[in-house]
Length: 531
Image (cartoon, rainbow, N blue to C red):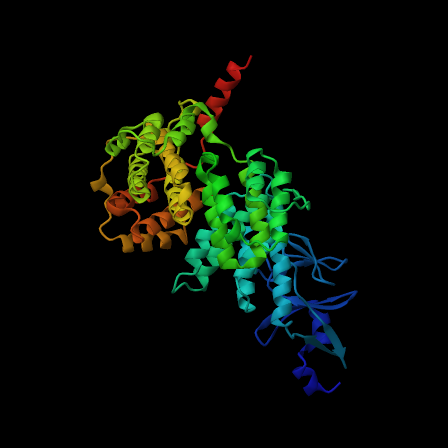
């Protein structure tokens, strides 16, 4: 073989066989690559000298008689014959070797970018299956280095995970919409974009870790909106999914089904408002990621609505049905100013009696009341260990009203007939959270003079938030994003300073992520009451 042609084809001279055999292992640099060469009884092998775990030199590793190379820093083990990872995670890159007249030649040509991207996608899936954060980060960085669109990784993560969510959507999907919004903002560099994608795929991996497949029916029924909604109301996933499959077969897209999904989400005070938040996020993800995610996202969204808890059926919110029936009826309108001190029943009555008021006016008032609840949250409920289960409340309970509010506005502007349900459910939030507040908190202590600077700083902080629990971190982000949307879009109206102050306090107050003592005490109390 002609040496000049060999170099052009990717083959390069590495060392002499005599030198390699004398040393047993040798490090060589060929172009940008640092390779480790090993002389074994099974032949000569060349590999990347940097361990794919944390980059330590494999030339300092231990090689046994079976061609198993061990990185001594963290005990990762590789088969030198094919690079297979025998203990650890990432595969090791192996390079072809030839002997020519006593000289060692190594073929270092890289695979095409398309081949690299296919391999990286598969490796990312393995990293997600093992829920290894560092490995996921490396694969995302490699994908970017291979010229890939980082959104491909989100599409792949959704495809891989959607059928592993036993009861449908979680914040792992909903939060993806907010991280993508941050990812798309002008001026984001590779580091920030990588963080956004890492938080998305990391949360998804953490959510579906070791979960099996929960299949969807392939049955099809002609799509009929009334029958579709009736099946959801019966909590009949099979029938509802068959209607959805029929809609897909007929060529329906998300935007054509969005009204029905929004109506189903608001048919009850579903899952403390999560269902409507998820419908809105689903639309945002489909719009950003394209039609390939439409069916997986909608199927698992439907599953989550079918199985959602119906809070309006428990005693605390049982007045909701009567308030909905009375909404906008003739009669004297109550004083909306009284909402600040209204419990659930009183809040429902006040909103129902004002049903002829412009929805945007009612919305702004309810947003203001819920912002005040967030501002005045009594930290004792989150910190103390001697309360009953019924008094368990945290920041997350109060932030839901803000993110639910943003979903209410967008979905009800699109489908105005849903305003009564949505506004009454906002009243459920404000009335329920009344008992968790501390009136000593004052607006002045948390006032934001420059909202643009505040939001910029809050989002910048999210790039290194340091919070281990994904659900806590995503609540920070989604609350900031929802507040920014309501303030900048003008929907908050005169309540904007209050909303900003509330989010400011929430964002700058330490969050308690785990309640060991409270959980233990409540468990003992519960068992003590068992008959």
